[in-house]
Length: 333
Image (cartoon, rainbow, N blue to C red; front, side, top):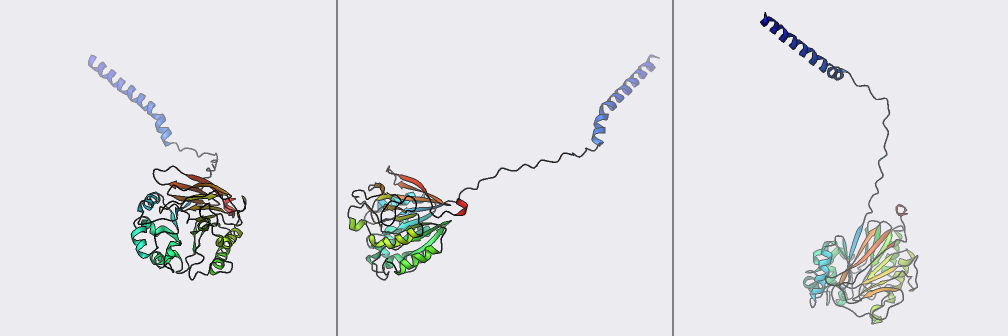
């Protein structure tokens, strides 16, 4: 009898456990089989925040008066700077001393700045014309130097139009720089094709300079080219020839201050050849230095620009600033 009762109690206990587990699991089973109701609320459309596109920037970096086998250290020092700066290189004349011959380019320029040859846009200096037709220069650069015998050409960097001038106005076959000369006519036509561009021009000689010897430093024969650039609302003119650094305030071709429509001239004959003394400051000259090799770096944006003079290692002179273009594209307004 006790065995029967024990078995009955055990059976009842198992039944109660089964019922308990069935009840406990029922809601889960029901919920799992019940389809969810679709939401009647309309999803709210969230406008993603507008991302400001970064300004496209183009770098133009360089100097004039660069490489001499008699003093190779200067060009090597400035080459180290350019090596660290991506972008287009401008070489503003007197690139290979002393005569700009094929041998000078091979032995003096090539070991220093030659490593940037493919990204360089050169200009002619007076030392290249030690041979009357600058044959060593045109032989070294080929099509990169523009049409042979002319040495003036243009190119674009983003929204900027860059003009490379041949400032050796008395060079054989050039025809001068006066009004109606081949280069002057070309310049006016070239600028007319880019009426809305920011404009930068460079060549070897400067119209304005505080150089000690005025005949060497100041070149009034360039005034007509400046007149054309000024009429086209050009922003910057870069030069070399004086082995020093000098930046001018914006001015017109007469040398009068013009902070609204004027051209900013920067002389950067600091490529490494040697140093030239500067005299008393010419009107509108804002900053000068004649004891530092270095390169001028321009960063060109849509409708604006910055400049920075970067000195050779161990020197402290620097210069920097920014400006806006006279010809403002619609996107920049």
